[in-house]
Each structure stands twice: as structure tokens, then as C-alpha cells.
Image (cartoon, rainbow, N blue to C red):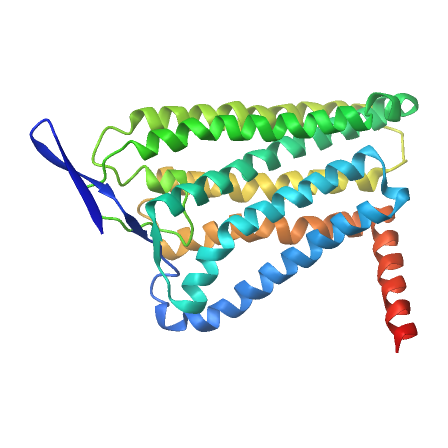
Length: 318
């Protein structure tokens, strides 16, 4: 459905809704495909919710590193909450339509949380550098007010960078097809549809990517070069920074792969693009809590204590 208006003697259309795609060629199997998707969302909410819970209730984990880990779990939940309505709507109920406003809101929410995740990963690399380079001043430098300020700055930066993209898209006329290639709304997907000059959108989008993901990844690399230089001959706490390296790779590899596919992979099968989009969506929030639980002894012990306490409470209530 489209609404239209007349501009300079020509009719232009403003898109009222978009059509989201599931997995091309497997439409008849969507109800079965919904089972692993539902399981992954359940795993994401349980894992990240458990990380947030144990950090909140366990005083041993009231340290800077774990506060940053709680931020990471929160933004990964935010990405999942942003996409879950349309993803499960398509595969469970066959609902492919999304309103123009709903699509913009999903794009804004998902990309904002994604940018926040990049900022949190950078903050975590700074945390690891301070902990290894200056362990005696670690808690004095990374106080709760400073950590709170860093979190607020990350959130503010992400929202402020996404708002111009939102308003630029809102003002564009749409008069072509209205089918998107994924089960959720991406900016790189949306700017292919308007029948007007989208160069400002592309330039601003490139600036956002460069000034956040590009700069963050560069600073993360620099911080870990310094960390590796510092930890030569030091055996203490390797699991923590190795877990963070895994988290960085889990976040950036699917994201960069999907971006390259959107820009240069137009000739590739749509099934491959769909697979990469879903890997980008599910891989980080599923894998990161597992990595931190295995590699970080304190998190693992706290989870075991929490689950044992809950089990004891259940048995005592019987």
C-alpha cells in the first residue's frame, strides 16, 4: 500500500508498508524452520538474562569488568528484542508485512544497539588494558561513576548517530518495489528502494560506520597490541582477555561479512545472503555468554552457585 503526493508536476509515492523475506525457496518449510529460531531466541534470553542476574546478585562480580559484561549482555538482548517480532512473525505466522514507521523503528533500534555493542567492546578492551597495565590502580581508575558515564556516552553516541539516518530515510519518496531481502529492516537494505538520490544516506551511513565500528575496531586492535606487549611473561588472568578477543571476533566477523555481501555480493545466491544475515543476528548473543562463562572462572562459579541455590530452594519448597 502506498500514499502519493505531487511534486514538481510528477507523482511520487511514500511507502506505507514493506514486505520482509524469510528464507527464499523454503517458504513451505517456514513453520519447521521457526523451531530453531525460537530455540535460539530462548537461548539468547536465558544466557544473557542469567549473566545480568548473576552480576546483579553476586557481590564478587561487582567489579568493572563484569559491569561492562553486563552492558554487553544488555545490548545483545536489545538487538534480539528489536528483531524478534518480525523474524518470528514471518516463520511462525507467515506475517511478512511491516509498516513504514515500524520498519524505521526496527532499523533505528537494531542499529543503535549494534553501535552500542561496538562501543561496549571497546570499553571492555580499555578495561582489560588498565587491569593488566596498571593493576594496582585498576579500581581507582575505573570507578562506578566513570563506568556509568562511559555507558551513557556509548548509548548517547549511538542514538545521535542513528537519528539523522532515520530522518533522511523518512523524507525519501518510494515509488518502486517494496520487498526487502531479510526478515528484519536494515539500513543498507532500505536505501535500495527509494526513487530519489540516496547518496546523502550512503555517505552518512559510511560516516557512521567509519566513526564507530571502524574507529572502535582500530582502537581495540591498538589496545590488544599493548596488552600483548604487557602480558609477555605474565600468566595471570589470560582467560579474561582471551574471552574478550573471542567476543570481538564473534561480533565483527559476521557484521563485516554481511556488509561486504550487501556491497559486492549482488551476484551471489540469496540463500547465502539470508544465511549471513541470520548469522549476524544470532551468532554474537548466543556465543558470547558461553565464551565468557567458560573462559571466566568467576562467572562460571557464580552461575553454578546461583543454579545450586535455586535448586536447593525448589527442593526445600516441596
